[in-house]
Image (cartoon, rainbow, N blue to C red; front, side, top):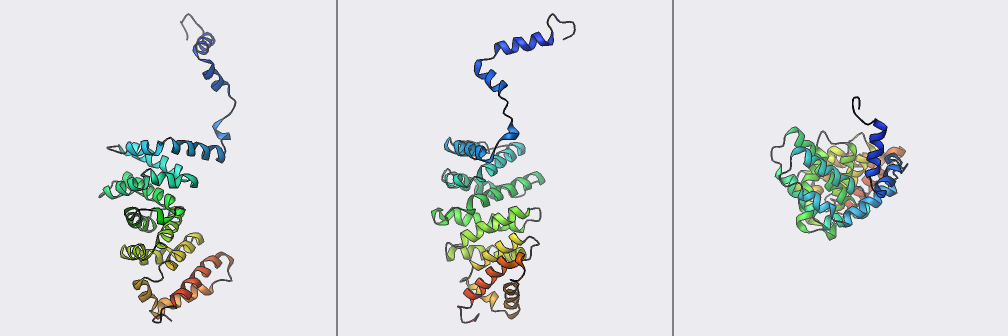
Length: 265
């Protein structure tokens, strides 16, 4: 403020005088964002969901630029972390909109590939704990291919693969239609690939998903192969290692259920 008629201190005082009492309280509040707790964040997400913020975000995706779309999907991803609002988000049409957005990306650029990956991850988050019987056929069947692609995607993180596998396990529990859809979308080879992940949680989730495919004709045929069955027996017998115990238990359960078919037994 050199050469001016007022000093910096005087200018700040004038600015303060123009503020309302409410604004002054906010400025004087010693609370900082870094002190925000998980409970406060969850409470905000619940309030935002009740206020239909999710629907407003989806509206912004129409003709959105890469940056806008990326931020919208990031926001939805963070909201989907709160388990209590997932059902509401699906009711508000978020899952249906994500399936549509993912399907529209035919030849994505590098930036859009990242966005598509986050769209698939958001779908996975929504479906991890949602009762699949409450979904429409279009939602349950439409989500399967993107989730399988997320598991297969090289750039996907272990967390993204893990949550996608949990969602596929959930969907596979619905019945023959979803099981057949998973198998049709090259799900068997994808799940088998994930079963040999270095991450024990991904390995366990993939094995459990395979368990839920028991009863599918193609999966039963695969288990009739002697070498394939030996592989499953090896996985089931690796229970002494604490890290592999959960995966071994899932593999043993799968073999036990599969042997109900005479051809496998």
